[in-house]
Image 1: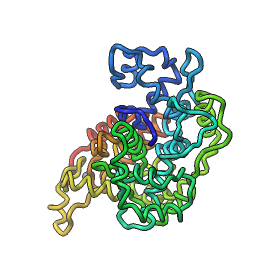
Image 2 (image 1 turned 90 degrees about the horizontal axis):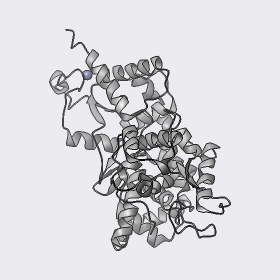
Image 3 (image 1 turned 90 degrees about the vertical axis):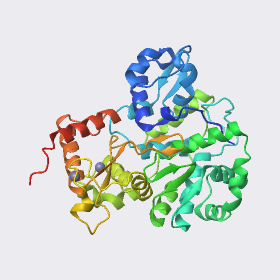
Image 4 (image 1 turned 180 degrees about the vertical axis):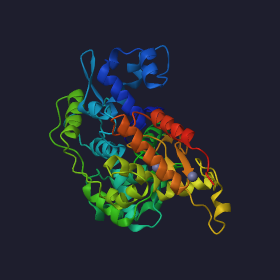
Amino acid sequence: MWPWDQGRLEYFQFDVLRQIAAYVEAHNFKAADRASLSAETGLSFAPLDYKPWRNYSRVLKLTLLVSEVGEDAQPTPIASILSRPGAVTCDEYLHFLLCAFTEPAPALTDWRPDAEFRYPLLFALKYLLAKSVITTSPVAGLDEIIGAYRTSGFDGSEDEEQFISVVSLSSSYEASGRSVPADLRRQARESLKVITQISYLHVRSNQIIVSLNPADAQEIFADLAPISGPRAVDREAEIRRLAELFKGGSTSIVFDYLNTVIGEVVESGFQEGSKVKKTHITIERNAGLRREYFAANPTAICDVCAPNTKRTYPWTNRILDVHHLLPLSSGTRVEGGSTTFKDLVAVCPSCHRAIHRYYDMWLDTNDRKDFKSGDEAQAVYREMKSHFPGLIL
Ligand SMILES: [Zn+2]
Ligand SMILES: [Zn+2]
């Protein structure tokens, strides 16, 4: 079973990684003290008694943000790309990372250049996509995926037909996954939660739910391939080699599913349809996430203009969109066992358009492609709300 880092889910959030990336670009993380790191990123980097490097170097290496060169934590090209707002979307980055992540991993101790490499996270995504091709409401348990990886012996490079045959035997996998030693199982589960930040996935009580139609699932599957090539001589050089491949744009992944929402980009009030904005819309259109949001928050009241849409339009259940508050290129936020709803608000379609017009205007004025962080996006949303004059009747 593949090892990962433990208890650091918060630090693997894409929005947080962007802030850490900006930090490692400007400072030597290996020498970083907790106070300045916390001040710049807003995270605790606990405990107090160690240098952050001791507890967080695995996060930085697993995410390909730094490689260690002597006394330096050297930022990789990925750190430089992530630190620029809007330069890359969460989807692009995570698809690359999961195609690059190997068991054994260079970020962890048992790596050797001549090892037999398997791609557990690539396996996991292909498993989920294969399920989406053959079932209408694709869901897979975290333990089921772990068990399937274990039972199949697949390395992740197998084709759709092979994956579909594995998926059709899925009933036995959960038990197999559950019998993995607790410590390793916890680590594998956390790594799976990290990838559910992808716009078309979300996680709920240890299950991953996919919101894609079969044709889109098939297209994404076809674009996925392990990132291999001649391995470097040591672990740190291997991290740099992998990160360089991202810089070169060598990832062949084409996000065709984004094309399915192009029309909606304009519909939602965005003035132009950049890839970054389309990702935002993909999250908002995630059918499973939307269903669960309204099941947990059964409101019919718009967060901006506040009328009860059920009362205004009594023949409807609710006429509301979910708006994703995080920066446009962020993924969905994951905490513990679930995707959180904290970054979603329910708004009526008119207000939703107006929000995006406001975002566009704000970004334009500040000469930006995207917000720097979730906090900044939330502040702009609040600013927009403060300008709402109340309904003019
Ligand atoms: Zn409204
Ligand atoms: Zn929105």
